[in-house]
Image 1: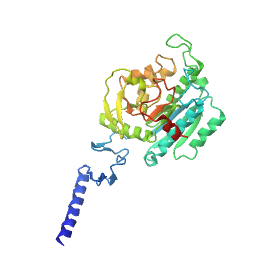
Image 2: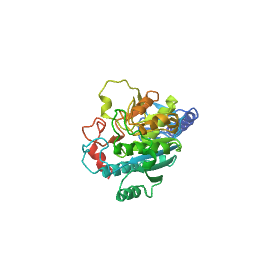
Image 3: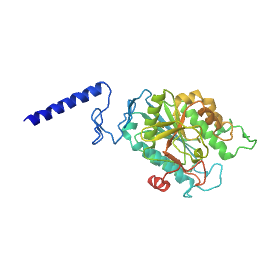
Image 4: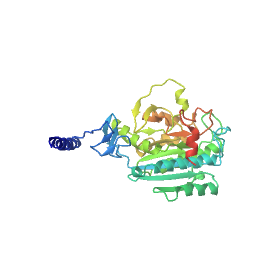
Length: 341
């Protein structure tokens, strides 16, 4: 009988301790099974709460002061052009349309991997397409049909934006027709971004995403932005060319990945409407004058604002295998390709 009383007393004291911990904002973790009684969660899963707190074992809790309200994903597609500035074939040597379809598949798969998260924020996927045939457009619409989030497929307004482009580039050469359509598509995506609510993810149609990619970007943005009290730029790819020189980087903890500071990206990145409005002229200058390198105006922004990328990559640029701007290291390319049929 004494043993039973001691057990009941122990359970009672434990409940009181848990309640007090909740009141004072402490987290308790049962290290035998990683159960978190203060929040009734499994610590081996994702214990963070969107818009409220980021919880990482063993770092504890970070209060979210910069919650994400919405995410607009703007996918730029052009399945009629295999490679923008090269004649080389891509890894696996398929038609460009396959890379575009897999990119869209990987994005929708990543969103659906955590419906609970994305039901709590406004989410929309917009495709701006140039010159894809009706069969491909129908496949885009089929993928997006009956999804729980909003979506639309738009046609690039080439006539509107092409006339704003300087036809001679920074090297004194004539800008190609393919580059003009690419620059026009970038310009239209920035114009759309001006009317978005919060975060915007600009993505090209040859980036295949891991299943947890979109979730990690949202949680990492909230956590790191809250810690630093500043807006961010997130690049989901880990480009091989960033390892060609010795450069200093700051390293941050995201949700399940490490992130490091970088000062260069290509044209796929996530940022906030706040930064788009702040640097709108600089962002859109890439769509009015062909610079060398093309993304130079972005890089100038990154000298003033923090840009970070994950290690390892959340999205891999499926270009030629020998390109330093392509395949991220330590990724199972075939597995990622096959998973997004």
